Length: 113
Image (tube, rainbow, N blue to C red; front, side, top):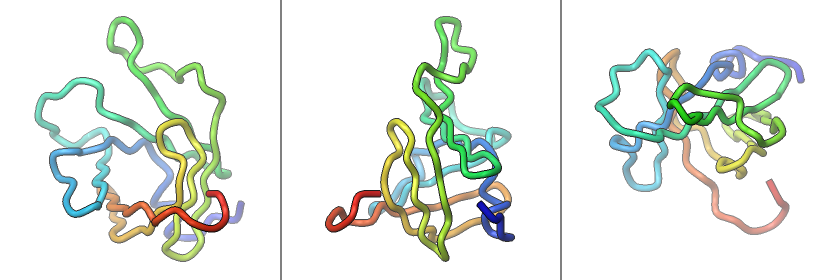
């Protein structure tokens, strides 16, 4: 996958900031964000070359790679296609900053993500 300027901004581990979700918008922040206490926050690691991983907490709450095989992601304009456990879908990127990603899941219908 050729990485554009915007796709390079996506390459990092994103953490779901569910407290900030509004009107179908999914808010993700970098791990360095000062989240309020919450257990089991969903994570999505978008890696160079289009690989996607879903880090999960192990028995001692430390993050592990998870048992699922790696997924994939691709950014086409403002459309983000993800195939990864718990995240598979087609999303519209509404906002992308160094430490903030806001996405909206597109309605199902037509081709698979």
